[in-house]
Image (cartoon, rainbow, N blue to C red):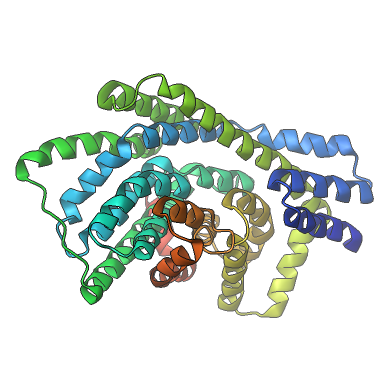
Length: 431
């Protein structure tokens, strides 16, 4: 029988601490300890579960991917990928907006982070769009919306967090591949939206790239794009694991940033390491605290209770999946992605798998929901980053995002109800 006081301490305590602006990881740990004390779970066991959550070889991929993204974000890769994207779409009407989307597609496959994508691409693109006369809120809207691809297009450290939270029911390589087609679909739908709005609002055409400059631009851009190719190619061919591929990607990022591009001095690597360690510390503390929180969820049998409750609301799988999407969209707008992945995966995964959904498909659905949450008020961290770079108020940035919710929600519904969209590629590759 579920102990209602323990549930209140676990969920209510966490909610109260969040309202008091306590860091998420600390709120998870404190609420877990409070619930454990109430139901007489030994505190050393809680500590053991926190350590066990970090005792995972695939977890080693996260620091390498974070560092690789940091190095390439600060080493001039973003600007070269923007130049490469400009070759393909920059000359069209509304080309700068389309260029923004394509550049985010390229960079998302390198950084694996919507925040890094917005910071790197936005710092270059937003001034360019301002000079060409694009409305500031529209420019920020297209920048932050296209940045959500970064959580789906591999390599993404959020996918690694999901694979770990799923408890071994999905491989990292499989969920990497499951995100490719949905990520590219978002890009395609956003490009269509940009073109329609450009025709309707009379956005300017871009300047074509001189033919003599194209070979150099393509060569330098492809050097950056080799990072996800190395990662994915190595995993698919079996040359190295996902963890080993992260180390190789990091080495390649350092090589082209400081050995080929040479846009920043080698001493800048110290700052990149410092920022990576700061990010990593936050992520690892979250994973450890979520390990204890997940153990208490299991002890209290809450995932099973929620599964039965949702299935009791309706026997229609469509209704239950829509409810899951609504829940994730709401949560995504008030909390950051990493803790939500760790909290919601053990709760909702049994629900969707009982309906026949593949864990890889659920991973893509989960990440896409939370990616949309990153650009949704009141918390939307990517929206805040975009508004800061664009120099506009958060309310203006939110209005700029509104036209792009339609293509993103359309992609979300397709991912939810068309399994082949996310599963065909990983199944074809043997995952």
